[in-house]
Length: 140
Picture 1 (cartoon, helix red, strand yellow):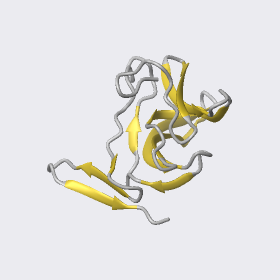
Picture 2 (picture 1 turned 135 degrees about the horizontal axis):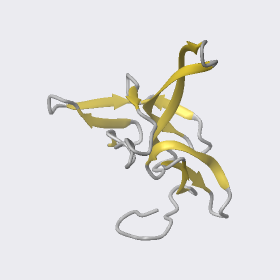
Picture 3 (picture 1 turned 30 degrees about the vertical axis):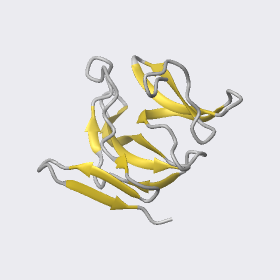
């Protein structure tokens, strides 16, 4: 991982980002300082931990129905911007609505961007479409 123009893993709050490719899609997770995976690569993007919190893009597979002729589920994928703790537990949803995504390496060549920025341990900001800042306060 790269942070601050460095080309080696950076440990923040005893966690370092890792990536793993699956079907041409990059997934993000975390290892601890001994190199053990503590949060499996499952997120579409992730930040380093700051004050025991990281922002990640949590992917969800939604079953919309079933194609009886093929005997397969009809699915779509969406993601939310969420705040997690060092164990990978969700602290809060930063985004109010999930974003749909095509989970195909030809469409998803780069990780989707993380739009929220930490202002303090409990305040997060995102610029909305009308160029105004949206501030989210997370209660402990």
